[in-house]
Image (cartoon, rainbow, N blue to C red; front, top):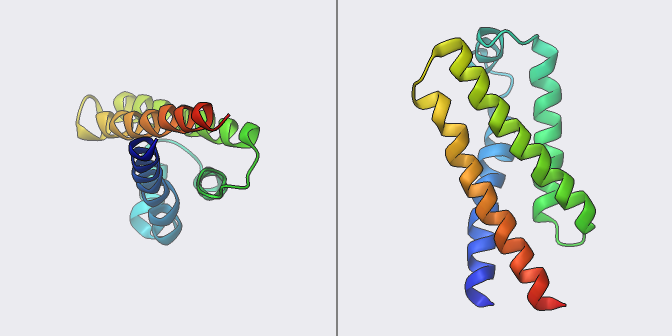
Length: 123
């Protein structure tokens, strides 16, 4: 049980940092705006994406959030990482930016699996 909690909180905090803190702090920089434009998305898409990322990480790290909301947050992040990988692959070809979202997806999956193990044990 203790190991599962350590795995859950470590992976969840990594997602919180990658998908909540970093985008919130850097979303209005020229580099971030150019990145969204480079992939062919309109600027407002980046703003909406940041809003949903922040809401999603809050749903994952706040313990009192209902389980169903957490499930939606996990699903949303999974779609985000998969489509980010596809977007980078389609625009830039196969490179590190194509595979990095899939690495973060693996971290998310580890968080998700450990979240369910903890909830199964607590029942």
